[in-house]
Image 1 (cartoon, protein in one colour):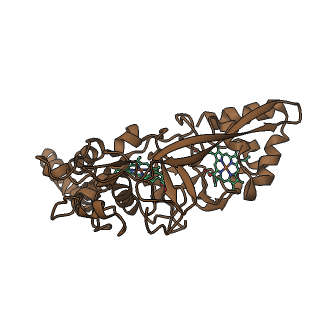
Image 2: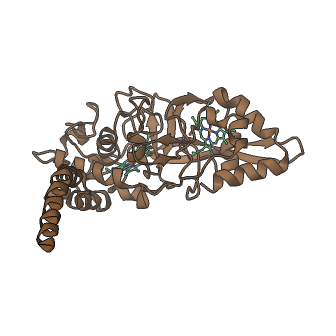
Image 3: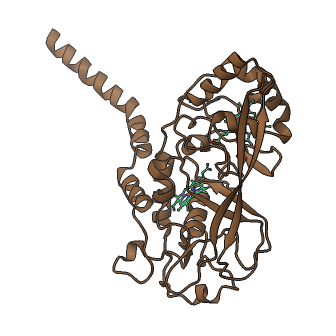
Length: 349
Ligand code: HEC
Ligand code: HEC
């Protein structure tokens, strides 16, 4: 009798629990990690694309004008690299928005890019000096005549943590790419596919040619989009899954110096606190508007600043001017001991 009762109780308990838990289990499984999508996205991120027509229809359509044939060439392991692109002031009716240094078939490349450096020296009160070098772009072998635009370099940033930045609420609608011009990771991936690799896609229906680039327009192309919606979404899904970021709590000195005015240390997301150190807003530090660079990938960074001009955290800080002039000066006025501690703190992120 006793045994029977307890059996019934267990049954009742199981049923009740089942009913309570069922919708949750279901909700979790809907939101769960989609391995197929991840693998598909990863492969399209990593594998090189080839020109149309080719035996592999899934990955043809590269160019006619492009910079690299795979996302991974610039974003190795999703991390920051030394690979860069040269942007043009909008609108340039002949060259478009970006200089493409490679091409397929007999299409002339837009230009060859060379870099010169302007050097200047920054000094601390105690006499310590830091040599700062600014890259200046020089174009040669112009394929389509003169370029009547200002040129600006952009280094390939780390993609780790972008998905997390996408879920910060109450923040500007546009928060992606180094100038914070793109509203979502998907629009940025579509932009990259089009401008960096010449892939037409649902957001960029045409090939990456301006109307003045005849051979580019006449180059052979497929009847369908090079990168259809489902694959664009898969790459985006893969990029969003890149989440190797540090979680370093701020030291008092950081706020005291005034860095946290733009480099907002942390945000509380639904399930965790993240430490990106950015307000995700554009600021003018003297040379145009750029998004406050998140500092959470600093430890692995081979360079700093939108054009990679800084070889160290210290050089990056010394490049701050404009809206960040007073914070920079507060840093420069720290004692040597504090300065070293401060740089170590950021280098450790
Ligand atoms: C030629 C090098 C190159 C290639 C190839 C390339 N990227 Fe990028 N990527 C960059 C650069 C440079 C930027 C910064 C662009 C800017 O700020 O305008 C960037 C920015 C991004 C960003 C925004 C990062 C941020 O902090 O908001 C994402 C996402 C991205 N790329 C994904 C991709 C994907 C996906 C592909 C392949 C379809 C790709 N990239 C191909 C160089 C490249
Ligand atoms: C007014 C806003 C503002 C303030 C104040 C500010 N920064 Fe920045 N910081 C930025 C912006 C914007 C960038 C990106 C600049 C660029 O790439 O052109 C940046 C870039 C950086 C970088 C380079 C990161 C990278 O990945 O390229 C470091 C390091 C940095 N800041 C540290 C600091 C420190 C330390 C302080 C305080 C002394 C500080 N910043 C104060 C806005 C600010």
